[in-house]
Image: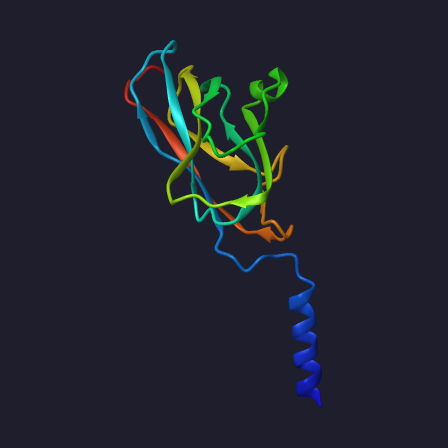
Length: 165
């Protein structure tokens, strides 16, 4: 009798969960060595992995605004229609760029697909991370059944090759 109760309990837990049993979507930025003066612009790719049957994705990209100055977003992957970026001055000056996208039909892409590239100008200072953050927009992905898909992030680093600080 206890085994039947346990089986029913596990079955009910599996039915009412909102987590999809898919591989985690991978979000990553690369580590880049940058040899530049403060006026040079360089591109940081935001790369996807395990992007299978995804219907929604959102996150915040964060950087140290005392070391990097946001310039623009470019090369948005053509499969991403209706992308939303928050590029208000207050948000960008705090070193944050938010991203949001949905397509209820779902989208699958090959590994290491570049989602978009962010252009920065180096202000100065030592190496600095480019990271994914949960604020102000939470990191989240979901499938076309509105089940949450886990997201795994890999942060990059901007490493200056000169010694201007």
